[in-house]
Length: 126
Image (cartoon, rainbow, N blue to C red):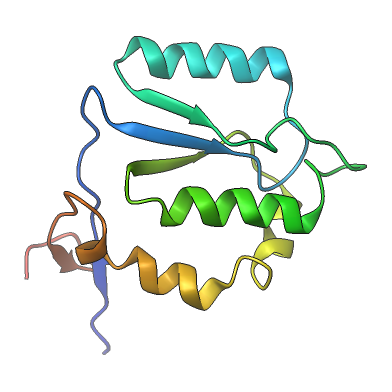
């Protein structure tokens, strides 16, 4: 049986920066504002990526634009968490444009500030 390692991210704390992206469908501006307010009220520094409110048909803008926002947020060392404004099919279209290999390499927990140590796939410490 293969053992899998699971990376548990560090807990968010007041003052931590989070980025909101829209990798899938279009975002309702009222719901976005309410969500941002909730995150701000719990003490987070909220950054809404520039293309979050874009719209192209059933998607939140072009694949290239959504991928750029996602990659910029994910690779920003000041951003402690990336939050998707909503889910949907459109996110699967971003795997290649977002440069999945590069994003995966950047994601290694040791490369993110405050990342916790890995644990076994069952949640137990190694």
